[in-house]
Image (cartoon, rainbow, N blue to C red; front, side, top):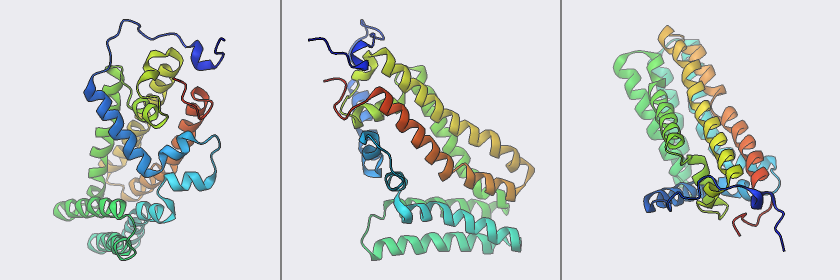
Length: 250
């Protein structure tokens, strides 16, 4: 009996291409495991995407607060007081409170601790230079690193988003042998690459101009909100190439 699923009609990308390196397979499994822990695995496999699922993938209400509030508090305090030390103290202090709350309630502290380390490192750099805009420098390097990793994965024909989605969907790296799915994963990887590049293109001019208010505002707007939009868009693409919960490779 013929299989009329969309995936079954995909043409091979390169039938003569050798089997994937073991290192790539391990990278894919590690990335997928990290995505699974963050809640991305659930929304990738769900046929419907509810607001609750999306909030869960973003870390839940507490995770959203940990991601947004330290930066927001820094921006508000600095805008109204022009006191760098007080603004940084408020931001770091709030991150510490979030971390203590996680530890006290014995909930997963990884995100809060990572946030605290990032906030503290950024604050230390800003205090060292005496420039409020330097509180955002580490974020520039982080975005650049993600952009470079995604670009390299595209150039070597192993799009990172495809590795994550493939293992989350139980497809491994078989998607590379199906032209439609391979192109979709290339496209998604390019879209995520575009997000990191867009952050740099928009925010760096404000940094060099010393416009802390505009830099902080765009940092917040292009942070969680833009990330959430891309998650929804990625879910739509994944559902298009994996139209059922049954892995297409079966």
